[in-house]
Image 1 (tube, rainbow, N blue to C red):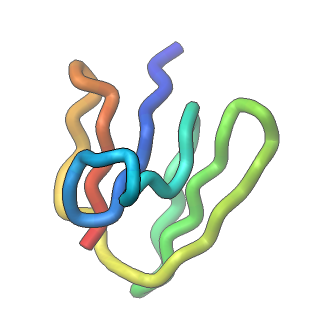
Image 2: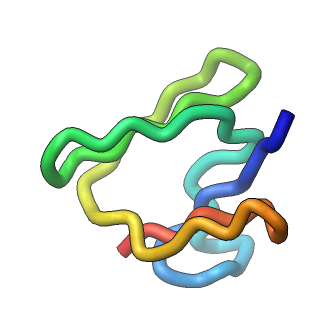
Length: 60
């Protein structure tokens, strides 16, 4: 299983949104991040990049 960490704009601890993300759902400008621990976070923005090798999701 490939899990990622989602960050706001850049990879830094202060911009972390959600860890262990296993699913990403996009509905217009709303992004829902589901984690393996059953936590769910919904934010407004757009996905700027997903790098599964580095396990990073960046959101503007």
